[in-house]
Every structure is written in C-alpha cells, then in structure tokens.
Length: 228
Image (tube, rainbow, N blue to C red):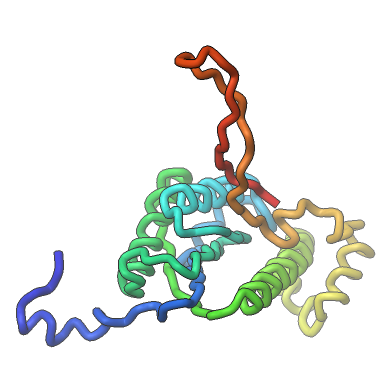
C-alpha cells in the first residue's frame, strides 16, 4: 500500500530513487550468513546446493520477463534486466526487496530451511559494461573454486587452522599447482558450474504442432531457457 499521508511521505526518503532511463541494470542477490547454513553440505561443492540455486535462478527468470540473462555461482545470482524494463516503474526499493523476497522464498522451499538473500542493483548504460561485469563474475567464480578446493581438501587432512597457515600467501596459480601436485586435481577439468558458474538465457525454437481447425501440421515458435 502506498504511503499517502503528509507525515508518511515526509519520511519516505527513497521513494523517488529509480534506475535512470536508458540504462541496463543488474540485480545481484547473495546468500545472507550462508557460511553457517552451508555447513550441512559437502565441501567444497555440493550438487544439492547447486540444483537448489538453479531452481531459484530459473524461477526468477520465468516470473520476471524483463530479465534477459542470469549468471549464478556459489550463493550468488546476477539478474540482467533489459534496458527498457519498466518493472515497478524502475523503483529501486521495490526491485531489491521483491527480488530478494522471491529468491528467499523459493530457495527456502527447495532446501526445507528458512534462508535469506540480500539484493543490490548495479546500473550501466552500455552493453560493454555488462560484458565486463560478466568477465568479473566468471573470474570471481574461478578464484572461489580454486580457493575452495585447495582449502577444504587440505583441511580434511590437517585441520582448518593448519590449512590456513599452509595456504597463506599463495596466489591462484600457486594453489592450482598445489592441488595438482598434492591431490591430482586439474581445476580445468572440474565441472564447469564449479569453475565459472552457469549462464541462463532465453532462446527461441520451432515446435511442430497440429491445427485441428485446418487439419494440418503447423510450426510454432516457443521459448525456453538455455544453459551454458
């Protein structure tokens, strides 16, 4: 319900805060306090958690048609909105609160536990910036993959404190060499969803159908979510 009283509007400071026109915007959602929640899952990666994240990402994409692409890895989902989107009149308060609520609800249902996601907006006028952001998130996912594998595999052998001590100061390349030498793990060969995350995007395809009125075979254009 809108705040229409003079007193209410006086304190509704951010009501007019909107995404500028002619700009793309990315809504990024992150799990809130997930370090403790994920203790129930296998480390460094658990396919059950990954599947729940994918269900949440697809749910957002299907419910919000202004999203043209999603990338997710770990407990993070980035939703790419069309430049012309007018969802909630581009009001930032509404966009961040509703997206966080939607993902929190569907994810909680999938994992049978109450969890929360926070949400923020990133704004850019150009597709070039979108592409740079994509590269950044893929790189972030890769670094997280290397760090998680090296830390948790070592921690299983020597304990958490000693694992921190042994890996301290090692860069990503050194950690990859450590993994290959000590655990025979080549990061380039672990599943892609662990290395760089997953992109979801809409694609159109032709589907054959039957028209009972004309008694003929017809082709119809349909839309589905492509993963890569």
